[in-house]
Image (cartoon, rainbow over all chains, first blue to last red; front, side, top):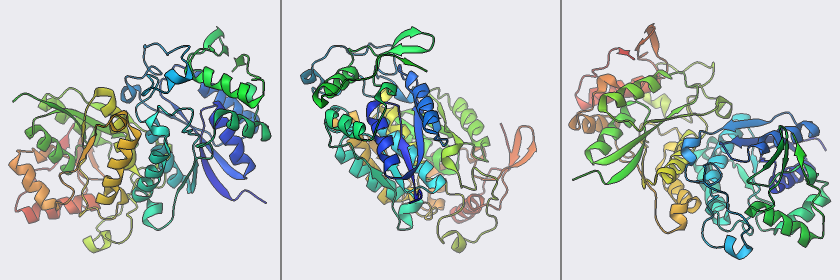
Length: 235
Length: 235
């Protein structure tokens, strides 16, 4: 079967969105990855996205620059320290300081505009309700509501068609995402989760192993019965 | 009474959003204007916004650059011609070619992020359901749905507070907006509506008088029994 459906994939180069990417490839979508640059501390992820897509021979990569002024107050985009060595229990209390104001609302809205621009009907986002329960913009209620709003805002919706927001990972636990990824041959050695990269040299980075994202990744691999092949990454 | 409430005003320098600005000033909000640059043909509006706010002594002006790639297929952002000399009847059929894909969804999403960043609880947008019935993202249904989605996505909503989307112009006809503006001393000679500016010199522009936006403006002034004081504008 040829590729029949254009799909925009919100792609940050991390464990979740890379698994998402390989799922959409397997399902034979024509892939249009969308990556955001917003002065995130771990902006190395953008170089990783580029290199990952080059290796896959995917050319339609859009990188969108968002001005940092709209994302104040997050530990991911400011001088504030990234929280370290927290237990899962601690992660579950309230909204983490790494929350970036309505980031997924902006990412998805941009994806809908881009979808209308290139006549795509599918948007994939790797949100996960279980491991990031503290982020309001990862919850199924938000996604469902956004789907409705997007179709009210768009030409597609007005003309009786639909832009579908796909969230195949939303109800999976981290180890289940990893298992899904292994079944689709995701090269996890070339994915990046860490919020606070350790710079080893000009172009080589190691994860900190202490931020929430590193800790969730480690426990996911453990529970999946797999070794994390990521040690350091050169971009 | 001192200024008690921060309000983000989506401000494009046009007739509607300038009337909106003066309404919010009169209502004693602390004003944070937000303007978008997205390769619009009438980008002169951005210079007009800046100058207008300087005259008012409002300093917190954010100008957000959006990449043109996400807004393809609109006559406002492409080489396609702006439709001219259409009757109101013609304007009411379908979605105009000047529709920019889910522009207000992106503008509002960005405003919500910015609101969370500066701890503002109010967002004003000058959408109008009557004169722009063809734009899906100007309809009350969209605004109501967005309000719900935004509060599901945000820290504010998660913590039981609300970011309010104010649309005081949504049910007004153009002449009623103009009457409201005159009652609040809006200097309409320094507002810009035209989609297809006539360049008179390096820094001086005149409206085309033929695009939908010019035509709606002219008929609004006529019905309001007022003369449009805008002749040409120097920025």
